[in-house]
Amino acid sequence: MATYKPIPLPRGRIAQWSRERLEALSITELRQLMDNAQRLKEAELAATCQEILTARPNGMPRAPRRAKAPAEAK
Image (cartoon, rainbow, N blue to C red; front, side, top):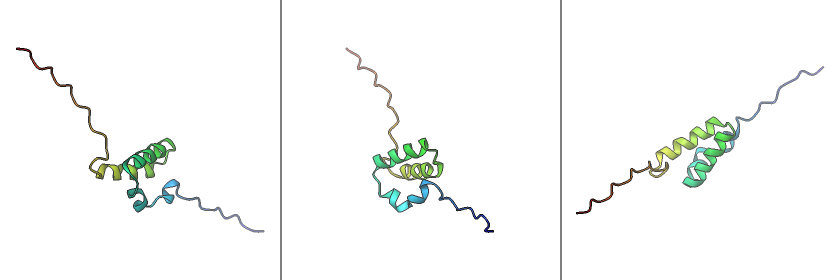
């Protein structure tokens, strides 16, 4: 009688994405991939996307600016 050997499952979607491939994506594509990874509960892929976005100069959206006070009329 043969013994059962479980088949190892892949590491998730992160196995399909190399760091070099992720770094080649545009900011918009990387944000979309990160959103999808978070929605699909792929924490490792989402964290890698976040790390790459944080390292880029314009990777994260700007903080909202405060409204300027109107100039006083003299």
